Length: 604
Image (cartoon, rainbow, N blue to C red):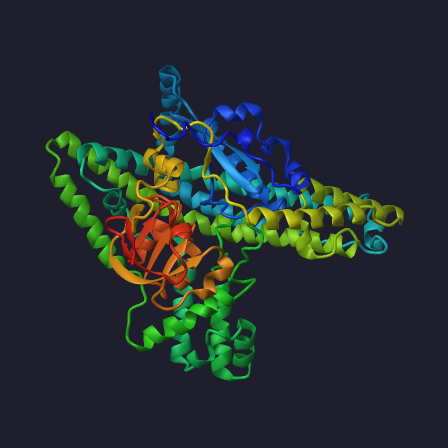
């Protein structure tokens, strides 16, 4: 009889950490596990939510899964999958898919899908241009939201004009517009995304059947070498590094010099310093509206809010420029390899019918794939930064009106509690009485700060509930790196716990040896040194400026089409993703070998 457990822990068996019960209960009811959830499979979405979630930040899951489900289920009618359910326990977000298995229902949904999705594929470029206009309008609307101002007396011109609405009302209106815009953004986010993945998945499935020996990485390389906005911020940092070298200013940038000190020094440099700072301003709007995370946590600040990350990359880039190295992504090489692979595998097909189908599928995949990465700049970064910074203004309002102590405390409140605080302020202003929420909210904030600390120190089960017989959703495999084999490893541990090898997805080719730097949080990025091997839970496209320092990347989470894998291929960086255990088995400072072609990390 096998000793392997029949499944992962049931959600009902996961205990809320002692002393954090009230903080857990504060998440909205529709995010809480219920007894009937024990019969479903859930996995911890550590790709998007690798750290415990502050209560306000749960809006990032709430809005995203509302929009994702709408797109899948109601708008494009994907035949075999609906939306994603989500739950939160001990600050960790678990998700579970809703599959469609009834053949008749799949057939019915397929007909709807063809009427809807095929129109998008046929008119992709026009609709995508329209999408960019919508996003830029949404961003402009967010930028134009009014300041939160409560005058002592209503301006006389408003009274004489018979306006009839006092200033306190606009606090509520602005808050509701802030939330509405954020929920709307996520609908825009998913308008094309699943269709982009879908086109790739159809091609992926065809290749797996037509060429049984083909690797996931090889198929992925057939859609590499495209321009996308998410790479533009790093391009701008390189441009600024070239400008610094041209003006003889590269010496002003050093690892231990703050961005503020660099700017202050450049302001004293006369014309060269002014010229470089003028170029910085051109880069900052819009390209530095990119954050150091993946757009799901309020404290993953934008480059514009904190210039530390882009400035820290300039010394390395400047040194390579002076050494005559080319900093650009190897676009021509990627495109040549892409075409060689496409042509080579096409030649292996035996019939004109197969070749025609192949041409159509790869043609569509290449047309739609730039969106898969490009949308992130507008959605998870630019707009999300505006959103969180507007919430910070509401934090200042609550501080000014004696409801919380610090601006950032607002993120320990749920979005419903923030609205209560706003109405408390509105009432106080209108009747001349003090606000009433200070004692209540301060106690809640302290309680939740402690809960976040406790939850951050806990291990979380990678999955909950019964093990599925198969993992047949290609998105779960390609994005999260979850396979049936991985689930067995999660359940029982690796076959040989003493093995010197850690296996994952072969994300990007190349073999290198170096010192592992285990990075558990974006706050630790500055520990990376030249030639280090980055080991983390999940890498992020916006860490690109530090990619020039590292020799390879290894992650716990991710599949062949995760953002980490895509970026690694674009930069020609060896990478192994979806290991499930790299950050727990590799010690900081340990020597390792990364084989990105085989998907193997060897402990040396």
